[in-house]
Image (cartoon, rainbow, N blue to C red; front, side, top):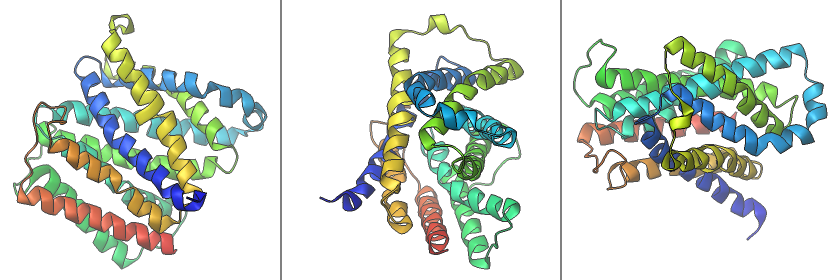
Length: 307
C-alpha cells in the first residue's frame, strides 16, 4: 500500500489513542489534582521530546521576542488551561456518571477555530457556518442535559459542561496560535518547548487554585498511567502519528478519519470499558445530540477544507 493511501490510517490510530487517553486520565483524577496531572505528564513529555530541542537548537535560538510571546500564550491557554479544564471535567463527570459529555464536547473545537480566525484574521463567516454552529451547540446541550432544562449554577452537570466547553475553546485557540508558531519553528521543537514551558506554568496554576499534592506519594500503578498518557495516548506518539498522516491526507479525508475519536469514545462509554464502573445508557436526546454535534462539525470541516 502506498504511503498516501495509508496516511489516513495514521490519523485514525491517533484519533483512537486520543479517545483511549480518557480511560487512563480519568483513573488519575481519583487521587491526584488536575494541575499536578498536567504538570507531571508534560514533564514526562518533555523528557521524551528533549532530543528534538537539541536537534533544532538553532531554530530555537533564532526565535524573536514576538515568537516567544505567542509560544508562552499558546502554552498557557492550550497546553495548561485546556488540559486542566478537560481533566477537571473528566474528574467531576464521575459523580454524574456521564463519560460522554466531557469527551464528545471536544469536537466543538473547529467552531472556536473558525470564530477566532474571523476575529483575529478577519476571515468571513457565512450564514451557513452560523446555522451549523448553533446546531452543534444545541447538540452539545442534548448530549449533556437531554431535554431537561438547565440550572444556572456552577455545580453538577452544568460545571462539567462549562469545563468541557472551556477546554474545547482553549484547544481551539491553541490551534490558531500553533499555525503562526509553525511558520518559525519545526513541529518537534515546538512540541518540546510547549512541554517544557507547561511544567512551571502548571505549578503556578496549582498555587493559584490552592491544589496541594506530594508527588512522592504517587504509586507504581499511577506512574505507568502517566507514561501512557504522556508518551502514547495524549502525547508524543499520538501527535507524531497524526501529523505524519496529515502530511499526505486531503482535508476532507482527514475529517472522516478523525471520526474514530467520537466512535471509540461512545464505544467506551456504552460498554464495560467505561471507567466509571458500568456501561452508560444513552437516551434518545443524547443520541440525537451526538448526531447533531458530529454531523454539524463534519459539514463545517468540509466548508473549511473547500476554502
